[in-house]
Every structure is written in structure tokens, then in C-alpha cells.
Length: 165
Image (cartoon, rainbow, N blue to C red; front, side, top):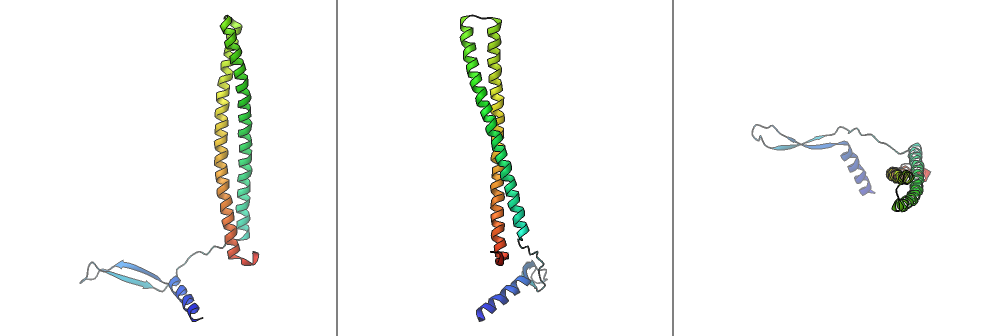
């Protein structure tokens, strides 16, 4: 009991006093240091995590996960479109190559141009799909951080308000 009271008194004393080393301008000791102590209370902001704080963080995490899901879905759709264009480009390129081996005509050159355009479209679609995938990854990272923050806030809330546990 005596140890507990001493501990509490020490905590209160050290929390309300400031000790610092200040250079002294003393004529006989110009390069000495002295200790200065004040007993004035230090003003600090005490912030407890309320239920509203936790709910706000959970809702933010949920919103980010919803955005991440939508971004991932859009990236998958772009990837599927790229795959379809890729198959069309492959068939068109094979047909144009075989046709041009036999003879050259305006119709066969048009088919080759169409195959080339499909390949360009495929490249553009793949670029868009990769960009969408990267954006989805970034949103997921933010969502993971928001989830971790909400979990930490919940833990702190249960410490601040044990009656809510």
C-alpha cells in the first residue's frame, strides 16, 4: 500500500514538473550547465477514443473496402475485354497472314490492317487493365491501413471505457 502511494505521488510529481538543462551565464563558470526545475503543471491534451470515433473509422474502412471491390471488379472487366480482343486479334492476324501468303489484294491488306488495329486495341486495353489493377491495389492498401486504425481505435476505446467491453 505504501509503495503504491509512493508510486502514485511520484507519477503526479513528475507529470507536473519540468526539469531541463539550461546553459548558465555565470561569471566564474561561463561554460557550466545548471538544472532548472519548475513546479507549474504542463498542459497536455487528453483524448479518449469515443464510440463515435470508432464508428467513424470503421465506416471509413468499409467505404474504402467497397471502393477497392469496385476497382477490382472494373480491373477484372477490363482484363476480360483485353482477353477477348486478344483472341480476336490472334484469329485476325493468323487469317491475314495466311491470306497474304497466297496473294496480295486490297481486301487482304484491309484484313491485315484490321488485325494490326486489333493488336493496338489489345495493347491499349491491357494498359488500362494494368492501371486499374494498380489503382485497386492502392485502394486496398489504404483500406488495410484504415482497418488497422479502426481496430486500434476499438482497442483503445475498450481501455478508455472498460464498461463498454
